[in-house]
Image (tube, rainbow, N blue to C red):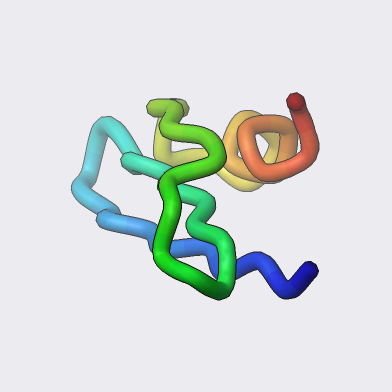
Length: 45
């Protein structure tokens, strides 16, 4: 199954949304706008 990740980035927080190919939300998260927390938010599940 293909997954797509959308990011909404601001200075303090980044919203992360993982969506399946048919359009179902698989995971939503927020992380600090720093590389490590954003990366962790994309791999946690």
